[in-house]
Image: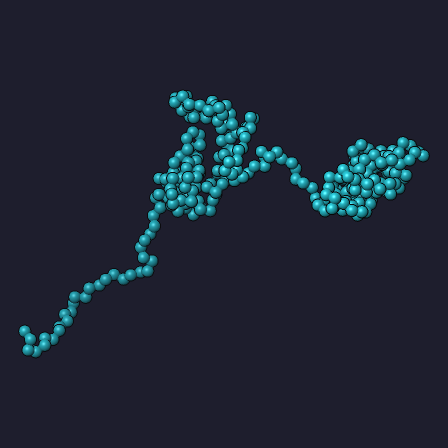
Amino acid sequence: MTPTPAPTSDTETASGSGPRRRPDPVLADAVDIARGAAQEEATAGANPLPTENVDEEAVGTHAGVVAESAESATHFFEANYAGYVGWRWAVAVARAGAGAPVTVSEVVLLPGPDALTAPDWLPWSHRIRPGDLGAGDLLPGEHEDPRLTSGASDDPELAQLAGEIGLGRNRVMSKEGRLRAAQRWYTGDFGPDNEMAQLAPGSCGTCGFFMPLEGSMRVAFGACGNALSPADGRVVHTEFGCGAHSEAEVDVSSTVPVAEVVYDDTTVDYEPRESGRE
């Protein structure tokens, strides 16, 4: 029997359709039996938590009881383990019928409504992010990677070129793979929405250092070949731009106004000759 999730009030019934059921009063009163089972589980040798985290206070206050059926119920106790904020001990108790003793069916730790829980698990291949791969690291390819297709490219220009020169690869980028790359490059640091692009004197598509990509990507992307540009060696969008544009011009004239030179030749200045000299 899997216990119902922890209740939010002192006494609740099992969730779901149909009329709400109140727990059997005898099962609801079996708080001490349930607590003892939770304490035994908390201090058991098979407990996976470090022994230094286990003490007589591992089982906290009673947090409610839920009816599972007419013959079973689940008691909840606050868990005082470090790192298990909001978790609760769930102790399922049952009895065979009127007059039968109360027995413990299961003891587990369950997250409460405000529990601190781990994020949803993802395969390691989905957790890899750009920049995680270092020197010597290997990233095995996926056999069913949607970004790749068979060596016969579905890009007409690339397929024609490969056929002409007799080259081929086991797999090449599929249309989905190219669209993902295009979206990533478009919204990246060298896309048209970048602040540098907004202030540039011209776009990469009109720059002499712009080297277009081949195939269907040619119309929108290329590589920058200007060593003085922050995008040197990077894939850039045709509408990206920077101050190192090949056609950029800088006004080198002085910003301080200078009056025109005026020659006054309407008058003649005479210098007196010293006496006794020729």
